[in-house]
Image 1 (tube, rainbow, N blue to C red):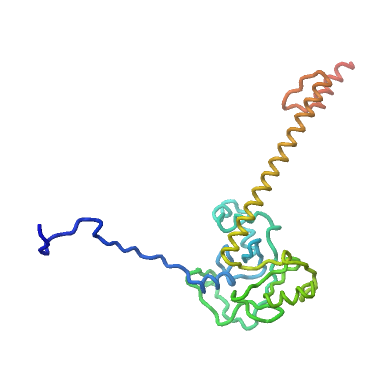
Image 2 (tube, rainbow, N blue to C red):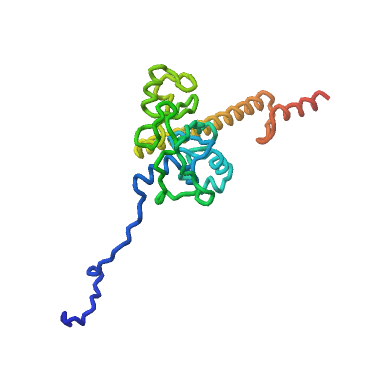
Length: 249
């Protein structure tokens, strides 16, 4: 049939299908969430607050509850899989902004990253410079004391060699950790943590194997010296004592 208006196009390659694009969170929303919400629960940050080795912020109570619950820990493996013990965390001392008034109500505690509400003021400030912490400039935590300061305050502290708030000393870049680093840096840190965890497991396995080999070697030596064949699951010393006491009678 010709193209007289009555022809129905059947060819799939001529049918244009439009796929609805997924709504992605804008940079401002992601940044707001990083500095205001617990990375695990997406609830507003509230004391006590902890920081992992990547530099992400969590509500301590919620995180620990998840870590001790095997089902929940497995469910959130992608988020907290690199955290296994308290030593993986730092207690963060964040200075609250006295001008921040947009506190959430009880029924608005949890906020989705893609649709966050933004206050005109930041929730936290640098305790040294009093500048708001919004993520526009690097912010750091001093590992020895947990105080959170911005880059300007860190430069001043480096000159003195100690925290300006509590006077605890620190000596190098390794004594501080940047909070909410760029994605590329965060990925590098995550890979380093995974590699370190893998090496620790290998060392433990090697140590366990070495211990078993030593036990087998000792068992073999005890067997050779006594002339007795000690069963695999028996204690060589106890087994020897049984026959020694029998021979003495």
